Image (cartoon, rainbow, N blue to C red; front, side, top):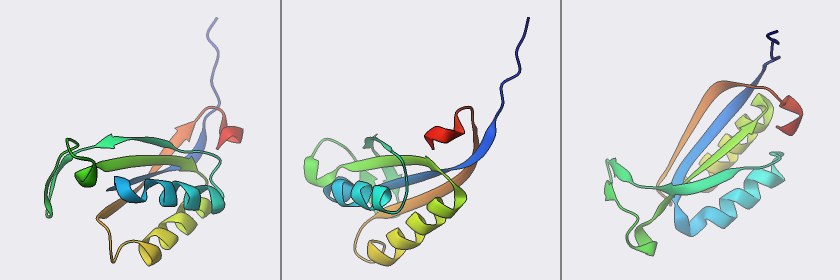
Amino acid sequence: MERELLYKKRKLLTVITEASIERKVTADVLKLGAKGYTVCGASGQGHRGIREADWDANRNVRIEVVCSEQVARAITEHLVDTYYKDYAMIVLLADVEVIRPEKF
């Protein structure tokens, strides 16, 4: 017998930024209402050149947050106002569906 899972809509906020501000950004994310986040290393190439993870001062991190749209927008506005001018940062926002919405 197949069961049907109940999906609920949430936002996936992805922040790719310099590792040097990881702790500040994750603290801000929690203060602004997210219930959690995931962080992993990131490397790649963009308009600022190649960012490789072989030297700590040059490392990037990818921070992912699943949350409500209201929380995602508040975090995005804060990040743009606080960090965009002085740090390499990309913020992405996407619609996702989750099975246990109470976790997010």
